[in-house]
Length: 129
Image (cartoon, rainbow, N blue to C red; front, side, top):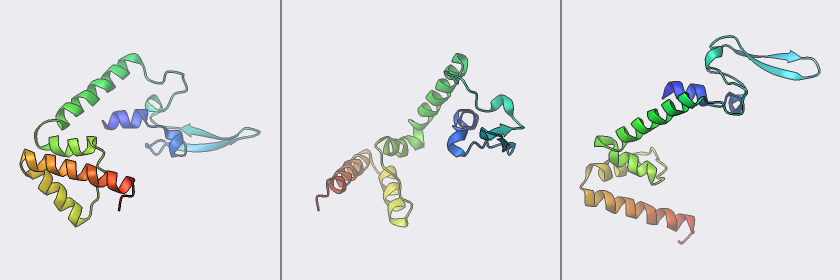
């Protein structure tokens, strides 16, 4: 996952900087600042219409499929379902306890929490106070 993130991330959305500490800009007269990278060039951004080769795309898809399969089973299943339901996590003590209670309870408890959270979100989104 880290390799995919580093290869696919858009360094230009991050000021043109790669994460390998080899990035710099140089000034080209009449053009402006040009990004350069002196390390890890083989893994850096490329200028092309299709930036990912077909074999890399297949490998990336396989990696994400494997991650999805891991997250959809075992102890991570319920937290993953919460993320898929677009529950934006809060990290205060009350919310963390709510999540722990919902994910460690019965299937019925978990479904009840998911239904409650959805109705609360709709209430806030519609300003039904």
